[in-house]
Image (cartoon, rainbow over all chains, first blue to last red):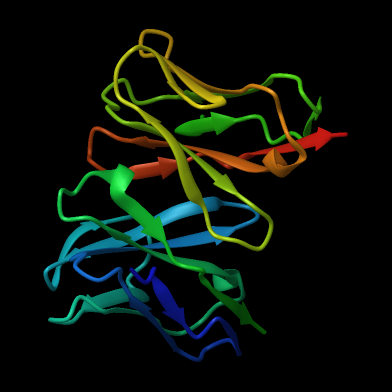
Length: 114
Length: 110
């Protein structure tokens, strides 16, 4: 079974631009979560989508948004990029039991904001 | 106070010894506890999870949970160079959100 895939793997943007990241979950998984990882703040939960609905949300500003499509693929959008948005963005999909021990991370998208 | 605290390390342990990684958390309503391993440049992978007080063993790994002390630990027996990585402790809060510690860097020296 293929794992979680994320595109693109690397991205360079400038302040003020917006960016869209994509995630394809493991086949059959309907839950997709997004995380931000930085050296200073560590790994932080952004939001979770399940069956096209946002089920949970972390403490990030409204510039961070996401959506999920009917095939469970998910996108995350960051508008008006700031230097501090430079980070590794990880997507994770979870089995339909909802248990976190069934959550698998993708390889991540490394975003650099200049 | 951070919600999930870990010593950032690096923790240096000789090959073959026991590595002990510790984590404390602040939310008494936390129910689920996880340990992830993250190699440099890679994404986290789950290595242990524990829900109940006490010890849980899986191969060379043992997770220990003490809810009264709000403390969870990971022991790695017979440490190998391949165990060198950053270990992330994660806790689900009473609001059903997962919160990660900042991680402990473990280095196994031959």
